Image 1 (cartoon, rainbow, N blue to C red):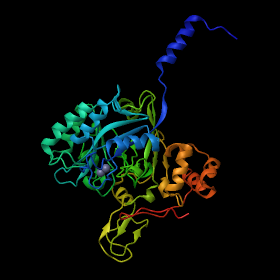
Image 2 (cartoon, protein in one colour):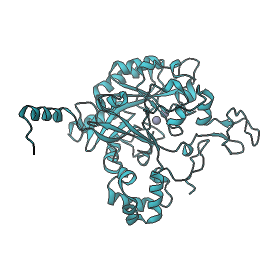
Image 3 (cartoon, helix red, strand yellow):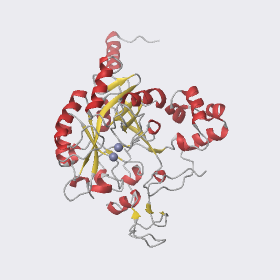
Image 4 (cartoon, protein in one colour):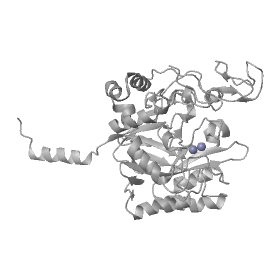
Length: 411
Ligand SMILES: [Zn+2]
Ligand SMILES: [Zn+2]
């Protein structure tokens, strides 16, 4: 046994104290509020159970997600609810930003619709470090919005003006589900993000349920930006159907901001998303003969089966039409995109068996990522255990989604 000289020992201790403990944290940044606690609508198509409190509790107790972004926190009534939980001490505003409830932190966010002249509509996500910053954004937004209580409302300013207001308040700014025909920046608004936004003020882009890292890498404009994968949940069950894994020293706004910039050891370590083939808008869909056009050909203007021009353009087809790379080149520094089949897609796994799994393993993240096949089989039998493990390893076969229908597990 050697003796460490005193000054070296002191150095070592200083290093240990300075280096923060960076751990893997699951992060889902796009969750809607359906109703206020008094029952007033926020996201009209969202579930009644989606209140601010219920989302925090579901993420902490059942999902095992360390950071959730709730993107209807611009609503003044929701802000009153947050204040109520802060006053009672059930939730705490954290030093580095975000609201802490038990094992989960909530980042305060807002999804806002813009429509610049000559372009289609686009959804943009803004996140602010503190409740007071979010209230200040609300005070500004309500001057340009018809009803600031509701979710995803159109704001009557340009995308750049909105971006400036968010960045000026120390916020993060992320174009939502960028490729979807329904209000994605590329899917609906423009062929280039630079037409809509200042690229310097874009913190990340959200891929959306029908796209993955490989597909997005066909567009060189996206090279500088991290990709995030989020659930866009409209019900409690859908929280975490897509999510990110980040290396963070604490579940705070400041740490997530560092991870998006890939600084000080904070980073996105993986994206977990649906196989894009499961997404509702993956391929072009013919509403006349109801077939999904899963062909190599890109420039479809009519259904190749029945000739009808009433087709719903798929995300894959949209990407190929604006791609400026003919050969795929994924930046080796990008985190892996891991296909994840949500537990609700697993054949035979109903609420009762799900309850047994949660009793045994605590959270969905533990079931998805940590339980072994034999541990799973001991609770729900070999068949379901094998589905879960094959899904985890990307070995489940799926058919293709399109035109608003999800693909399905076929094996
Ligand atoms: Zn949206
Ligand atoms: Zn949304």
